[in-house]
Length: 464
Image 1 (cartoon, helix red, strand yellow):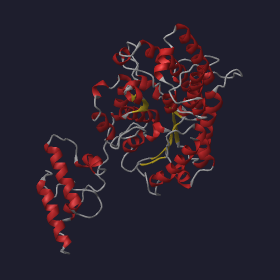
Image 2 (cartoon, one colour):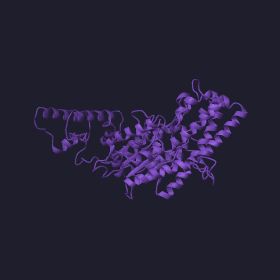
Image 3 (cartoon, one colour):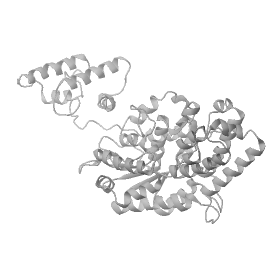
Image 4 (spheres, helix red, strand yellow):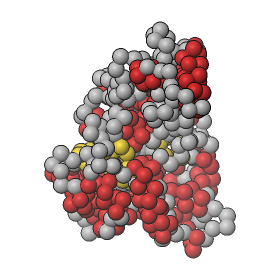
């Protein structure tokens, strides 16, 4: 597994090189760098969905540049290793960055918890058929836990009151190993591994980029084991009991509230570290939970946890990536939206009306001041309106094609300077069939009720 992640990091650094910032990039936007794990990489999103890095890039305007180096499965230690001797592409991106967003820690906790629970499964004969103790990797992930532990056997196991108590004691020890502090009895994983690694990552970033205005954002972790009330009600009693016990570990380890002199959650330890080290915390936990006045928690809306049993996915879905982008942007505090992607992503959700209230308010806050960047080529013309009648329609597309035909036979263009600017839809300084196609597509879009301006429409059209 470690070799695979190392290979993934190497591939990520090479792939992200395309996003490394040219010297003139982001004069009016921002240079964004994303480091982290599967959450940051957008694991599980379809090809036409947007991860939160893409949403943030659009938010800051067309001059912004994104370099996303995230690798699924990577731990905080993997990123410590990557930054000790960073590849040229990573160094170049970090040196010019205005904002660096870090998503780490989840895999550290999941690997430890998965190994702990799989060892428990071995002792109590809860392994899936065909698996033995030798099947357990040194650093198992959540997928290993779900494959190797038989969930039906585990649910039956907790049907016994005595066994339920055994599991309760086991999960209590696991929680202690993760969140206890200053203890020799427990491993204190957050205190001894995750926070020190985050500190090393932050230190190494600042060694590359010493700009005092550099903003470093670290995300806290959400609780993935939250279900819609009707979904939870459909579970068998034993399965519900099993998930409640595992859910208690998540709540105590990642939540904002449960802390004491001897134990502190990841959210609390990260907040304490950030306050002392000029780091910004993006409180993803609170917006994902979005607890309402009745106590209902809503992380299920932002993940794939309610997929069928064998497909349960704790990664953020499209709504989750939108929520993370909004949380990060609000934490950064520069609340002028220069794009349209957040709005179109929200409107494209399958059930936007159900968007949980706390996260929805964050979304509203970050799009409240929206100023779509004007087309830099616009002067006394409307992009797409070649004939100057203030309407973009098929007549304009025909004019573009007619002028294109002239230039193809080496005849001079008959367009005026402003007509040529209006006709050059994609801004490549050539007037051709691509520009005509864009005009026709926009005309069809407006005839079916589309309200966006041509520049707004082009944000998605030119990506297609």
